[in-house]
Length: 342
Image (cartoon, rainbow, N blue to C red; front, top):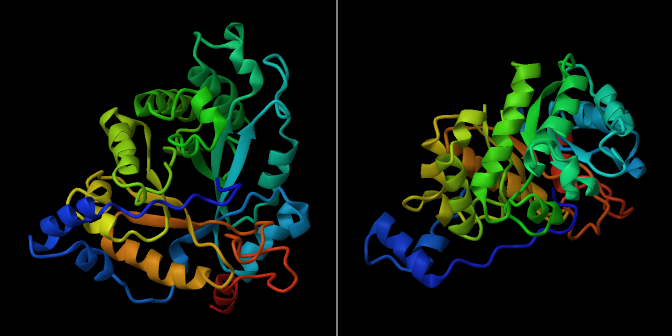
């Protein structure tokens, strides 16, 4: 979740790019040849696979029902990704019943022909007390206490298509990643995924389970891709119905290089959902979608869905990822206008 402005990745080193150029076009290719030669054409966005991240928690953009109906009726999108975060405010103690007020409102507001992917994250402070843990494990407690509570509550709701277990576990930007021991330990993340998968499938066998997307798989090459590889190697494919990634920036060379993103994703043998992707600035979002999303689906045949980040964001228009902003001069982005017209 990009609650603050995303860090942009460092440009790949000349050595790495040169090695990739050698692998793709031979030893006479330069680093510049590889990077600069990939400039995909812009094409109309395929709305049939496009959804958006819509957290519906900021009332300045309307009620959850108003926001979801705007997404469905004005923009013509049928998929949303929503966030159900476990916190002290939601469950102040292990003996307290979770407060589902906000989340019930979000689920009830979903139009009948819209589906929601629910991201499950969070770690209330009482997890720091070992006596509150299931089998001494924070990760198992997350699955048994939060995943189980959510899956049970919404098991009969057809608008909840599935659950994504955690978000960007490899970044220190979110303190709960370190608290849960995930930042440098993809094996630990897969352990948590396995616990959560077992819980969800025991309650709603038909609900999809997705892994946590790392930070953008194309950026910080090859560190982020390596975390994905390590999740796969630790057995994550046994616990997912779709593989989830985030994609920001461009870095097209990291998609097509030998051993790169395309090769990894198409080798998984499972459908891929891009659960976050987008660009900053209300006048930059359309060009990004028309170029980047089409390039990804052209190159990576396993991509089934892309969730734009995000529907609404209360940040300055020139740096906002939101298709809607609070800036009266730029209340909607160029992507919003295009989707509304098409």
